[in-house]
Image (cartoon, rainbow, N blue to C red):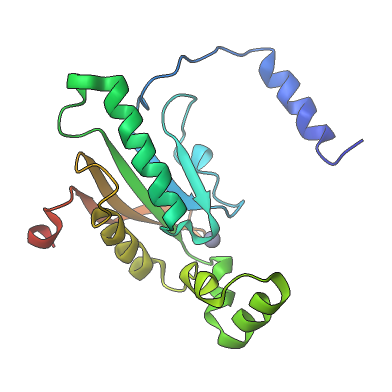
Length: 185
Ligand SMILES: [Zn+2]
């Protein structure tokens, strides 16, 4: 037995009524970046079905070198799959940060140093995952993606904050393309 046993049972029930989806660009035209917090499963929060949107998750939903690599690859893949049909807008990356984020503890220097010593992780990397004010960090991360030269200019980026107290998602930064950032806001 494993702790996963009851979840595997749920999977068996779901699989009984399963319809496969072919590999294709996300049908919603969106790619989600969010925190790994288990109180905000993006598929449930956004009502996503299979095939609608890739979801990338990490602590805080922060933009890291790994996230940039994943998005650069997804953009390349979308361009290959869509060809001319992709036009100038391959997909929109929606960055979602949230209130009450557990990474907030890492905003405290003493806690951060203890965490670094216990795990061997670099303090700088831990500091980079902190979300204390999601309305500020989401703007910062949208800008970071728009400035990432690895990601195709045909990818747009927007920023949102999910409020755990209400279950509501608010758009903080409207979708924009690289190069238009400086003029737009
Ligand atoms: Zn979080």
